Each structure stands twice: as structure tokens, then as C-alpha cells.
Image (tube, protein in one colour):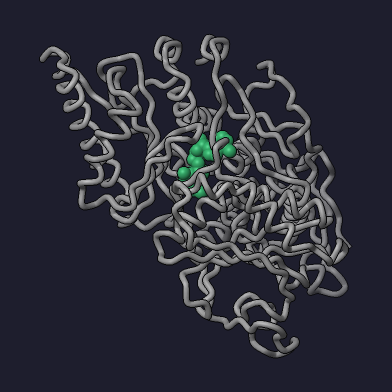
Length: 539
Ligand SMILES: Nc1ncnc2c1ncn2[C@@H]1O[C@H](COP(=O)(O)OP(=O)(O)OP(=O)(O)O)[C@@H](O)[C@H]1O
Ligand SMILES: [Mg+2]
Ligand SMILES: [Mg+2]
């Protein structure tokens, strides 16, 4: 028995109900149910209690980096700023610029992505845009001069240039922290630390690549301007990201959401319910998106701003919140769309505010890890091996940057496929390796011609282009495995209480989860092509 709150009494702010309503208290525990007459003060108290328990849960989960981790990141950015400043003086001097211009010349580093939003976790990268003056070129000064300056720093390791991406960047580790480092060139001599990235006079003259590189920073700043309560937004987005990770719907490359998508969805709910508490916002997130009439787009900005409707190819269109108001790039497919929708619905069922008599909220249930082995009986095993760890890292990165092709091919023969992005290591195999297990539909075609699937995918992988085609020892194996052939750590019956004996190749439970941070990004990665019209509209 559950009494729903009347429609108009939804939690849309500090005021919860217009009229007291009757609800059962602890209806599952008390029989017959004790009926309690709720009043707004009680509901408010209950909301505070829920928010406290959510914040407690977040603390237990270690979602916020420790002060030491924070300091490490801040130091990394400060040091990068110093390096960039030294770099620009050197470039100005090499360009034989007049002394006073050399003295004025400056460049800076602007953070964006999860770090810029203040929602990074211990495992997040730092997205840092290097912004330099007009005389420092991308190809020569950034990718050659700055690259070699960075390479010579003891703090920097695993540095790679990703020149062919839409947003060209350097990728490296600074004291062990992964950094994405694109470059934008502004029509100025001096780029101050707090440069205004919305300044139309600057934007009107930047080149296309710089424009795309700047769009990440501009989108972030816009999100921060648009959310009414920053602290609530940050708490909620941390929770939403944890939920998405645990439920297997966080991975842009594997057809799910990336950080930018979740940031915009979260900001949308915050904007719509400016006075709601952090816990109410999380509940409203699931309510909003479990009922969302996809493919109706999610638009964060003022709805009066005219926009072109999406082309109909995107399952879940989400608009970037800064001009020229393009769509966030999305890899969502038929299968991943289905999974995301069902996860929104699950979230809604577990957090619905229909039962306000329920004082305790089991947040653990919402964030439970997705039970792949309870949902699927057959899996596509994707095994990637290489001669050494460095080659493996490059190989995995390359394959992941093109993995959507495999998903689409599989969807042509399978009704549904669940591409689990978790990276496992099989210690029974001597070569360095990474293994993925993708859930297959039991209703679909159980016969998959693995040979032809692999041939097609290898063709689209275009291994000749991969590191100049010199990596002959990088291999990819595809096979279908049953539940019983999975590593024990992935099975529901890992305790051995029940379940069948392994058949075929036996895999042990010595698997590790080890995310690979790669130099490769898909060609379409981030952003859009700007044109004169876009620039004119910028601001
Ligand atoms: N698909 C995309 N479309 C548009 N912009 C994107 C896209 N993916 C990434 N970006 C830009 O790059 C930034 C950094 O992306 P990244 O993948 O590092 O996610 P993030 O939000 O920082 O989350 P994480 O904590 O996982 O790193 C985003 O904030 C966004 O500006
Ligand atoms: Mg990031
Ligand atoms: Mg990044």
C-alpha cells in the first residue's frame, strides 16, 4: 500500500506540500500500518535527515579527494603554469620579438572538465587547456618546443602527442596524475591568468582548432554560471557519476555517458529545482530522466535561444551550454540507450519520493554494482594482448577509441548487447593483457560468426595506422564464453555456493580491474566545427 503525494506537492524546493497528506509509516514493517498525518515541518525534517545520510554515504565512499590529493593537483597545475610561462618567454625570444614584447608575453593554463567543475574523484584526470599568444604555433611551438620542455621535467611521464584529434592535445602524467593538455592560441601578446574566454573580440579572431579547444572551458564556465547552488550541484554530480560508474553506464567510448553529458543532465535538474536539497535533487534526477520523452533534447540554456533540432540520429541529444549551442558528441547506440533508460527507471523506483513516511533511505541499493552475471548467460570476451605493458597501453587505447564499431556490428546480429567497460587482467595468460566481457542477449541470435565479426572489426580498426603499423605483437581475440567460464571474481556465485563447473578454458579469479589511460582518442572526440557565423554569435 503506498499513497502518492499529490502531483502539485512534489518536492520542488524548501516547501514540500501544500496540504498535509496521509501516508503509511514503515508500512513494510508495521502491520497494520500506522497512519501518520504529515505536515510540512515533518517533511522538511525528513528531507534534512535524508540529505545528512547521503552526505555521510558520500564520505564513506571517499568521493571527495583528500586534502593531500587536492594539494597534489593544485601543485601540478601551478607548476604547469610556471612551465608554460617559461615556454612562452622562450618562444617570444626565438621569434626575435622586441624586448618589451618579450617582457609582456604570457600564457596560462585553464582547467575544465571534472576538475574545473570541482567534482573530480581520486581517479579523474585533469583537463587543462594551455592558452598562449598569437605567435606561439600549435605544430612547432606547442607540439615541439613545449613538448620537449615537459619531457625533460622529472615530474612528467608517459607523454604523447595526439595531433590528429579534432581537439589536438598532449597527454601525460604529472606526478602520476593524468593530464589532458590541448592548446588554444588567442590574438593577444599577453594571456592573463583570468582571461575572459567569452570575450567576443578575442573569439572573433581565433582559428578553428583553438575555437574547439576553448569550447570545453567555455561550456564548463557556463554550467557554473547557470546552476543556482554550486555546492548542491557538485554533491549531486559526484553521486550521479558514482551511480553511473557502478551501474555500467559511464563510458563515452563504450556508448554510454561521458562526464560532460552527466554534468549537463545534473545542471538541468539543479536549474529546474533551485531550492531543493542535495538528496531531493538526486531523487528528482531519476524522476526527471526516467520520464524524459527522448529524443527530446536536454537544453540547459534559456529556452528562448533558438537552436536547430537534432538530426534524429541521436538517441539522447544533449546540448552544449555555450554558443554555438551544438550537440555534445554521443556514442549511444540502440543497446546502450536501452540500458541507460532501464537504469534511470531503476533509479526512480529506488528513490521515488512517493513514500515520504520512509525516513531511512538505503542509498547503498541505488549505488549497487550492476550484476552482469545475473543478467546475462553468454558474454563476448574481448582479449587484447601485447609484448609489454607500454605496447599494451597503446593497443588498448587504440582499440577503445574505435570500439563503437564493434558494438554496432554486434547489434546487427544480436538484439541487445551490454558493453561492460570494466577492464580486467587475466593472469593465466603470460603476455600483458586486458579483457572485456560484454553481456549478450539471451533472446537474440546465440550463433555469432566470430570469425567474420573479428575480420570486419579488424578492418575498421585500421591497424596500419596504429603506431605506423609497427606493432605486430598487438593481438585481439574474440570469443563467446558462458557464465560458467567467467573469472570467479565476476560471477555472482563467486563464493562457490552454487553454480556449474567451468567448461572449456578455465579462468581463475585472479583478475584485476585496471583502467588504461591512453594516448589515443577517437577522431571525432570533443567539439564541433566552428564557422564565421558561430564566431559572430559567440559570447
Ligand atoms: N562527447 C563530448 N562532447 C563535447 N565535449 C566533450 C565530450 N567529451 C569531452 N568533452 C569535453 O572535454 C572535457 C573533459 O572530458 P573528460 O572526458 O575528461 O570528462 P570529465 O567531465 O572531466 O570526467 P572525468 O572525471 O571522468 O575525467 C569535458 O568537460 C568537455 O568539455
Ligand atoms: Mg576529465
Ligand atoms: Mg579528459
